[in-house]
Image (cartoon, rainbow, N blue to C red; front, side, top):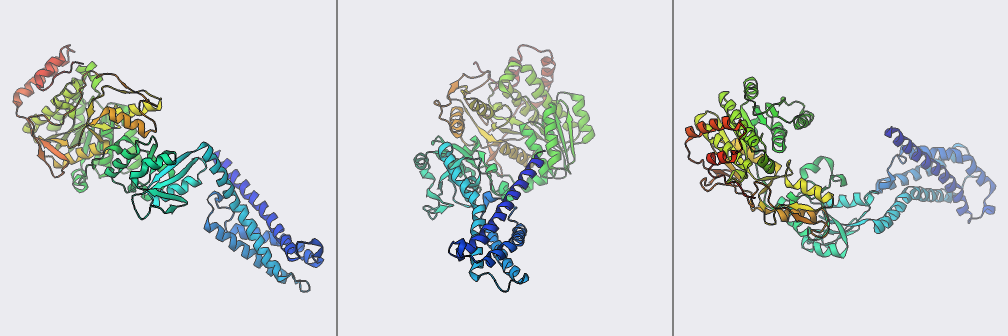
Length: 621
């Protein structure tokens, strides 16, 4: 019944305005006579007073109708501006003209009202109407400014363009924000010293710390939708030393339809600190690669898998097949895709890649042309506790899917791998290295083009460190980091998926595609920055606790094995690791024997893994 309450509130507001306007016409009419006769009732001639009183009901009704037609009962007076003032002036003019017409219509020939009466009536009516409309806004602004000064927080806006202006305007008019924009920052020398809606552009981005302290700023808003990722990282790095909470507008693409609103502000995220450029994907080649094709995504409900499905749907895939063992994830991505792409030919299936018969039947029935294999157990500490499950799911889930792809003539098969497969120190990394070896082996004996895509940690993915840190900060800390010197490569989910899609377009078979992820990031620095971005001081407001390396964890990750070397591709940020020479027939025989062994749930699975993956050296934590 919210709509009923809202409708009743609007009706009461309009009724109140109408009552005020009725009183206004009466006050303006009598007041005009009083002013004409020097504010003395005794000097007003009785015929003049009688004319005004006789015409008052008709004049009042006409004025109410005029104001209604001019929509002066529909305006949101919280945001009243020039347009509303123009209507008030026009309404006052029409009401005055109507008064003149009434005099002639009712034939008041002997005692026509003094000509000055009409001018005085117009002035009084205009003033009272304007005050009754705009007075609310003035009073609200005064009260709000008092509340903001006493209880609110000071805000700095970075960006003196249209987006910054709209943010300032909406923040000024929004009763719920209780925030005061104290200053604006912009790198344009021409804008410094000027004012935007009464707020001064005080300096450039290098001056942020100085003005944040000067104006006691508690929140900084980056309002430059066209800003590059590198420039965002630079500004965020300046801001993070101010102890201010940071928010940012989305990019131009997201603002095209909706304009600039406070609701579109998001918290500055840790990926905004990654100053390297994003991966640039050749959209045309990707679209040509998947458009109209039948594509299967295993693990399609996970972080990477679901984003792959979104991109494939967006690029006009012919039929999209999603396989996942976890029904909740599968259901969520299915509902999202059916909502966003109602014409998509979508089939979502619950299945385990470990089930040979089920996977084979799926391939036989739907005949996928391209396969993205994202299904895997990825959580390192959990796989250290349950290593046999890691082998059965990662290695043999991949092997069974690979064999089904080979058997049913799939054109391309793309394995989602990880930098943990390089010189692995944990079971998860060792199993993913075995998956890469399976891919390279089958590429030599199959008509299917098998490739692997290797990347680092994905920001915001299920089980990643960022969601954990955010939750710990919300709970007041401490934030837990395993080791003060631990480092990792990071990328965003869209970057990872772009790499996977590009690999599919580049694939000739047997490659391991690797992203140039720039410099590794210290997890401790990541935690400190995230605390600062949340408006707190590390080790003071939110503590950081070092818990020690977890089972199977190492201080740093590598991207390529020493033996692999490196080749460039058409994308300067994507490289190819050369296949390692090995006895493929012997490897296949050993991998089949290993399957029979792991089904017996042995206790020495790590030793067997070391025999198959010579570079695997279990960590001794």
